[in-house]
Length: 77
Image (cartoon, rainbow, N blue to C red; front, top):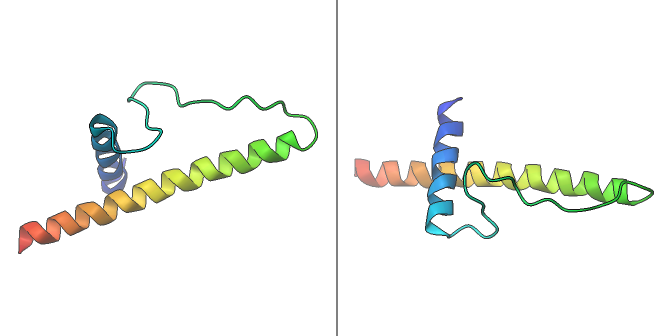
């Protein structure tokens, strides 16, 4: 695990414990699932949902990194 991944995970865990991240779940808990039958257009919806989940995870990682960098800079000052 890289430093940025570790920082993002730590930040994400802090938000979960503080209850500040909407829809967060505790570490070790399964993420909420969406029941979608995979027939016709539903497969496309599931693919879009998977893409959104991935994008949200990336967003959270970058936000955590930016916030950590800001805190480090403030500590430096």
